Length: 228
Image: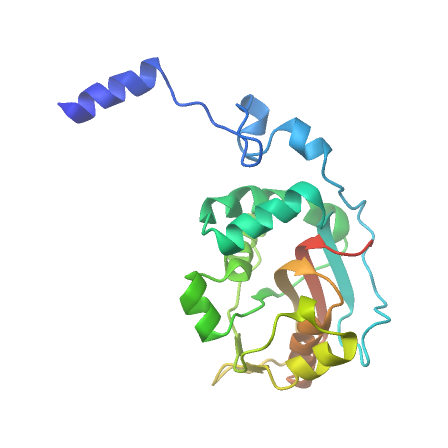
């Protein structure tokens, strides 16, 4: 009986969808994205040009980098809430943003698979999920590109944002490897992560993929700390 009453009440007084950021009520065309147009207008979207040269890298293995938005203001808040407050529902608007920008940034590219940046098992246990894997799975669903969780982080590293460029490189040496039994012979692979800064983390993964035989390796993130 209670279920019946609740069902009737929901029909009469449906709960209104609200913006993931400002909590304002969403109008019909905003609901799928989960972000209102006012908040969208405050985000800095990239026009589609990807980076090919990354001067901070000692030896570059990444062929192309793209990000959906600039890592400022509201998007910073979204990512922080996802990573440190356990708000996994924020993955949905993040994936929507990335899907929309993907067709602009990578419209001429074809990828054989998406590869999420892994977390170390201690960090994964602490957080309960890997945000890069959640993004990759969501993108895989919409873009119809398979997602492969093939890389593992075997070394617990210090937070990259607290280190110099040289320290970042040393911090990541030997941090990643392909999981046992995985073989990559050729193919074009797109690494997925939440934030792109200097590129040291994704470059280390690209190095492993290239050494295993990958033909081309790109990187796609939700946000970037630099202009594309």
